[in-house]
Structures are given as C-alpha cells and as structure tokens.
Image (cartoon, rainbow, N blue to C red; front, side, top):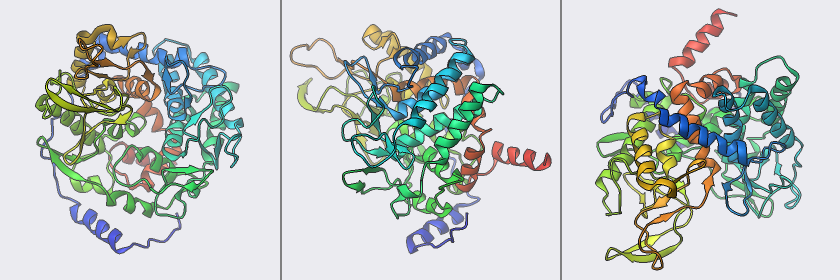
Amino acid sequence: MSTPLRLSATQAVVALLVLSLSGCTHDRGSPGPPPSASWQWDPFLDTLQERTLSFFLETTPPATGLALDRWPSSWSPSSIAAVGFALTCYPIAAERNIIDRTEAANRVLSTLSFFYQLPQGTDPQKAAGYKGFFYHFLKPSTGVREWKCELSSIDTGLLLAGILFAQSYFDRATPVEDSIRVLADSLYRRTDWMWFTGGRRGIVTSWHPERGFGEHTWQGYTEAWIMYILALGSPTHPIPDWYMFEWYENYKWERHFDFEYVAFGPLFGHQYSHCWIDFRGIKDRYMWGRGIDYFENSRRATFIHRAYGIANPQGYRDYSGDIWGWTACDGPGDTALTVDGKYRRFWSYRAREVSPTWVDDDGTIAPTAAGGSVAFAPEICVSALKTMKQRYGTKLWREYGFIDSFNPTFRHPENASEGWFAKDYLGIDQGPIAIMIENLRSGLVWNTMKRNHYVLTGLRHAGFSGGWLDTLELKHSTTH
C-alpha cells in the first residue's frame, strides 16, 4: 500500500511502545497448553454440534439464506452476522455427513446469489445495503433493511468471513462451485472499506441513511479483528496499514485472577475472529512484544471467566467452576427485584462482561460463552457445558442445543420457585459453538481460510508473522 506513514504524537508513542516490547516476554499467568486430543472426540460434542448445525439447516430458508436473528420468536428479522455463521456451518454439516456436499453448495450458491442481487443504495426503505456493506437486520421476506437499523461494518465483516470461507472450501471445478467462487469474489471486492472510515483513522461502527456516520470507530481489542484483516486485504478498497496504530492505541494489557492478557470483557470479543482465523503461533506487532499469541490470549480470557464464576463476588445463585460464561445475550428484563434479601438490577439484551476494570453481571449466564471457547480450553468448557445441560435439563437444552441464556438468581414474584430461562436461540450464539467445536476437532475452518489469498494478505498487512504464516510464505516462494 502506498499511503505514507504519518504518525501523530500519540501514534508515535504507541509505535515506540510496541518496539520497546519486542523481544520481551510477559508469559506469567499461563494456564498451560490445551490437553490431549481425547477431549476432541467426546460424544457429547457430537450431539451438541449436530443439534447446533441443525438450527441453521432447519430454520434458514434455502432459497434466500436469510438466517434468522432468533428463533422460535413469533417473528424475527434476518441477521447478516448469522448469515456469515450459517455459510460457514453448511460445509461443516457436509463434513459431518449431516447433509451432502451438493446440498451445502446449493445452499451457499442460493445465499450468495440472493445477496448479490439485493439493492444497494441510499433509499432507507428499498435498499439492503450501500457501498458493498449491508444493514445489520434484513426483512426475512425481501432482504431489504428492517426497522431503522444501521449499516453495520462489523456485521458485514462477519458475513464476508463466511463468504470467503465458502469461496475457499468449494474449490472443485463444477458449475455450482465455480459460481460460488465468482460471486464471493464480487461481493468481497465491491465492499468499500475506505468509504466506511468516514475520513477518520479507523473503520466507523455504523452508518445511517438518515444521519450519516456514527460517532465511533473500531479501536482497541474487540471482535473486529476479522473485519480489519478483511479491510487490509482488499484488492479494491483497502484501508492503510498505518491505521493499525489507532487500533492498538486503546489496548488494555491487564492482570486478572493471576492471568495477564489483552482485556475485553464479553467472551464474544475473544471468539468471533477466531472462528475463521487460526491465531496459534502467529503474532502481530503488539503480541510479539507480549510473548503470547491471540489464541493464548483467548484461552486466558476463558480461564478468567471460570475464575470469576468460582469467586462469585456478587453472590449470584449457582455460579461455580462449571457454571459460568458472560457475553452478549438476552436477560430477564430491565427491572429490579429484591432477591434473597438483596436488591438486584436485571437487564434485557446486553453484553455481560468480566474484566479487571469493568464488570457487567446481573446473574445471567450464556452457554455460548463456554461453547464458543471450546477450542481454546476444552478441559474447562466441555465440563461446563455438560454440567449446565445436566443441571437445568430441558429448560436450557432443547432441539437445537442450548438456548441463549439463563438466570438462576432472577425470581419473578409470580413464579418464585425457579430462575429465568430465555425463550430463543440466537444465530450469533449457534455459529461460534458449531464452528469452534469443528476447529477443535479438525481445524477445518482455520485450515480452509489459510488458502484464502485475501485473508493471508490482510494478515500480513496487519503485521502478523511467524508460525504457519511464515511456513506458507516460504512454501510459496520456493514453488514459484
């Protein structure tokens, strides 16, 4: 990329910090390497993965691919992030012989064809997106914007991650698979990442046709890593490499329960990008200075959540070493009650989080927090999932595996005998569970994405090196 490196005073400080950390090792607090492969083949994971994959296979219309945000609510829009997860899950279902490759390919082709023809433009009522991006929620009947939701940079990033996975997975010379690769290429290449910066030094979180860009850009360690990698790898509308200095500026290297890590409270921030990118052994400028990789960082975050469950500093019911996990999820409602003699505030949908400096916890636990971390820490995540299933039975575990969330502490005055359990499954819960089980067992999604030129280019422009990335580069240079 030709954009010159011009650093502000703050960026210069960040750059010097990164350089000063190079060669230093800060590996205190490691929970140790993941255990042996015996965890990968636990029969419970077969059942959980098959039920979770069936959520997308049975609730998503094959003709459009508009995966639902939630089910079985009487009505739900489609979530474009859920579509990205669904596109990744169809090949997994084929690999697990739940459907055959032909059905998986046809589902993907129908989805990409439908999205490619959706109207793009500034009309707030008739468009599905603009500048290659899509609105967060789409009408399940037509695919155009639902409510007055935002054009979402991160949700488009998650959608495109699924699209590019499909592009690399369906590599056979057949008319259907050829069409998948071409459509995936067109959908990715038309995404104007530079436009979504709004003239700032980072990608803006949102845009509305009624009022333009939102106030905030994506900075600091979040789930948006995958989005930045795709934006940096674009051959048509890339962002400059030096935008990454703004990204690092708000990193928080902290210590919690004897673990040092780059902090982010809800576990989805430690999971979403890892669904597609194998961060084991590769490091960016920041992590070379810290002596760990982002996989290890997510492993530590997972152990921190478990440690918080054991400590249970606010005294919520049922928290333990096998009942834990905080992330974005539904909740009992925005209300307050006196429970067990203590005044408690509860919330509806919200990102529950646990970090050294900020805790948002109302007693609500989301099984996807442990489920989406099985590849990082199977020895604690599988046990937690089994315990939750056994303890709460069909109130929590149903036809598609775990429902979104539950709160053992909440006691409604009209039903004080038991806690609260969500009614719905959420697409953005189901996807990480199914995908990370597969990455634990076979590395399918990770290894497939290593064949995608756009992803590899994005990783290199983001400053990643080492491990499998250097091996691929060396192999490429010696064969050409």
